[in-house]
Length: 530
Image (cartoon, rainbow, N blue to C red; front, side):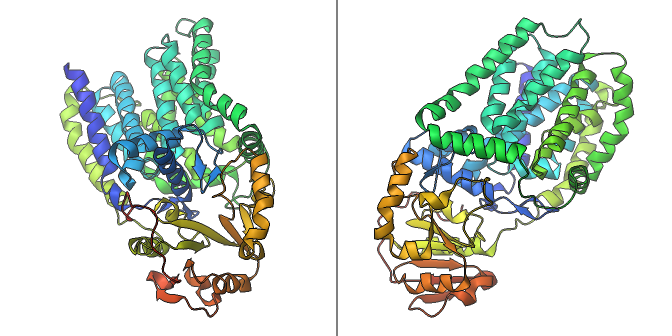
């Protein structure tokens, strides 16, 4: 191993350790992805449940959530955590290990790029700016699609910068991006195409090379989508194409705020990291001056920034996580706008350390999670064989990753998102009314036939959600379920009615209702603190 390879390996490990610090104390689904809008990390528990299920059953091709196919997202966010848990066991850190490794890879590629452009001192500063960015730090510490997409994008852009003739590497990175986040995975391909259109002819990749990269992308990404279309055609078309791509991508989905697109993203970018924003803004004149020379690096960087700024603004739905692919580009912009001599590397080390220490306080603060998660974990440790019904999603679906006998959810209202933005789970029997659930033997055969028509040959998805249109429905459900346990958030604790359930108050005023105890039938293979 030569000196530069050893330095790259050391940097990767250092970045991984920095990103992983206190990671195990943050529960799956806990915390905020968008502190400004108070948007929680609920999707992490959904993806993690599917990954745990995949590793346990060996069904590596089709993700499943609460017994039903879950085809909203491509498989990389399930495959990698499932493989990690198969190798190292189920825990919060193993489920998040692929995202953490993706974050470390982002740091490594940024270092290699900036070092070549501006020296090792600037490279260390650029990596420190990126990895200590609160948005990046938060998202690589979650089992979500964003870190995987961004790592694939940074890899593709770095290959374009260093070895644009390596078509198969370019295509593999673009294919991995698509397998990470479907249509958003086209971002690196958009950067490559924009560079092809704007770059000087002397270093522009040949069209044949780009065609080979495109073919490689198709070979990497297409098989999973083709398999789902051939094997689960109706479900895949309805959920992935009609709902995920068309409804959420081109229609007007329900938003989390009334802000304009520009203000939404600008305010969150600044609130998360004013230091990086200021450094990048001050570096824009330098980038514009460097573009006049038509060198590869500034052209590629400009294309990278343009694509990652334009894509969230053009996409209908607003989400702060869409900013993540822009953050490494901002770090490269800031760090390559000035040059330091190679001898300044050791002088930069104290500055990098001071920067990390200064910013680490907010990054490593005590993790926040819903008190309902504490109550769910406490219930899990009772090792009961009863079915648990979680009322509302105050636990952010955290109960689905715990080794419980059976979990259902009871949602206020219809139990369905707005029409067109999810499958009609009500018609399938995945969402059931209280009346249907309490007389389930009568209704089950009809709903089973509905699921078979859609290609789902398992029944554990049936009535996994119970709709509660009226407050008294919860009292009826509890009163008619003496053998079931209930986890109830504080705001609904007074709507449970009188029953023979044992009432246990939990943290924050949340309530646990324990029915007639049943012996567990499942063997525990993991702990309850995930």
